[in-house]
Length: 135
Image 1 (spheres, rainbow, N blue to C red):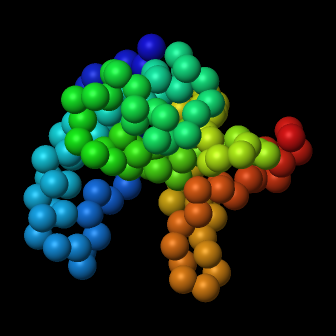
Image 2: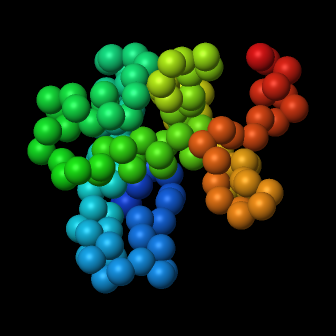
């Protein structure tokens, strides 16, 4: 069990709405922001309990039934960007699994792989030389 009860916001920083988003997106983001860390912790616990699964399968779990559409999937994306959730290689669908090491050692913004053309973040992290050696 992760105890980050004294933390404000999310475990891993990520913007909840882009500057250019409509007012509705900013309003929704403001509603979720205080709960983001709690939801991230719940997502981590769900992956710990259920193992690898798609983001849609995770969102369909009964423990997330009280959250709005795509709230859980967005927290999964944030955790994937921090390296806490990683794609399962050779899976038929995009499934994620928990990377326990990254919970205490999240990737920094600079470590996140980006598309060379558009600069958008990829959910596949850049591994350090040391981490590549471990594989």
